[in-house]
Structures are given as C-alpha cells and as structure tokens.
Image (cartoon, rainbow, N blue to C red):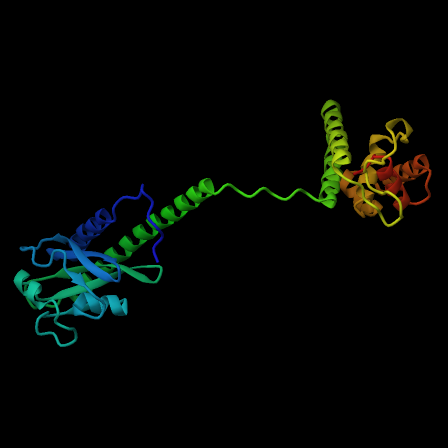
Length: 305
C-alpha cells in the first residue's frame, strides 16, 4: 500500500511522462503509453505517438487484456498481433483497433511488491518488438518505480513529522532514585577529570544543588541497614554533617552504586590504592566501620542521594 501523499508531493503523472519519453528514446518505438494503478485498476492517461484518443482514460482491470495480464502476473508480456492473439482476453479490442496498433509489449512499474503502473510500447505492424525493445521498456519501468519509491519515502517522513507535531509527546516518567544516584555519580566522575579548577568547582557545586533538589523531592528511603538511608526530610542538619572532601564524596558516590575500589578508580581516573585511602578517610569521618555503613551514613547526612 502506498503511503498517504504529502500535499507537497508533485503529481506522479510527470514521472510517467518522463518515463515514456525515456522509453521512446531507448526502444526506438514511436508509440508509447501508460498510466497509474488506482483502486485496483490501471487507467491509461499518458500517451506519446498515438493518432487517436481511443484509449485515453481506458480502465484496465487485472486479468483482462494485455495490461490486465501484466497486472495479474506482475511481469512484462508481449504479443505480436494484439487482436488475434490467443494468450490474452479481448475486452479492449475496439479502442486498440481504432488506434491501429498491432505488436505491443507492456512492463509493470513495481514498487514494494505491488504494481503501481504499466508502460507500453507498440507498433502498427506485426514485426516483433524484440528483446532489445523489451529490455529498454523494462529499464524505463524500473527507473520510474525507483522515483515513485523515493517520493513515497518522502511522504512517509513528512507524515511522521506532521504526526509528531499534531500529537504532543507524552511526559516522560520522573527518574527513579537509582537513576538519580547514577547521574549524581557520573557528574562527580566527570568533574574529577576536568583540569580547569573553576569549571570543576562549578560542576561540583551543580552536583550539590542537584543533591539538595533530590533531598527536597524524595520522601525518604529505608535501606537494608534499617533506619533512614535515603536523603529524606529527616536528614541531619547541615551543621551536624561530617565534612567530607570532594574526592571522598566522589569515591563514596561510586561505592554507593556497588562499584569495587578498582571500578571506582577506573571511573574517577585514580589508582585503586588512592580510592581505598579516600574511602578509609570517609569511613572514619562518618564514624562507621564498613563501606556499606559509610554509604548509609552519607545518605542519612544528606551527602549522597
């Protein structure tokens, strides 16, 4: 099924006319014609080299006549003399007789497995059109199919953009506490790698503001140690908090994510022994005896999210 057309898309009739000019040039046959498929039938609308209007607007249905054969089988087909031919039906003999054409070859314009049109080349005698003319007509049909495919892809993308404008995006869900902790640790890790002192301090201050916003927005989190391990409304007052250095907080933020000393060192660009020393210092300042209790105490004091 073709994608709904964009209002900006040009009429495909111009592409069919160009394909027929190419077919006439490549095949050397003077009479070429064709049209688009719509509502399950082929409508002949474009003609070059015809003498009458007998076939203009002709509606060809699948399985009937030469064009109907091509629609049904989705492959090119030719007859050396249309009217007495026994391999096709003769529903359209009258307009064909009036035009006086005899030998005809037709090729489908196939896009994404469906026939979107048919191109014809015809002569007024019974001399077979031959493989060269058939190949040239098929090439013109393939080129036309490629042009239609491109136009339909443009239609698809335009429609997606229109839909995005018409339907406001749903509000993303608020990030969970684990996601906030991941982000906090990542920001501190980035700050650790910045050589510019002023910029590093600004980023760490941003981390502190981020942390305070989390404290105000969270309702508390009871951790595995029991008690309040989250930075909730019961966090200790600022004046009662242990004073941890920025590096100690950097290390604790990654330990809080479950990182080993080696992993924290990799994220922070430090040696594992250096991480171990910062962790030991932070544990002492917090008055605890393990890394897990250090994380819980830091959260209780509002030093970590």
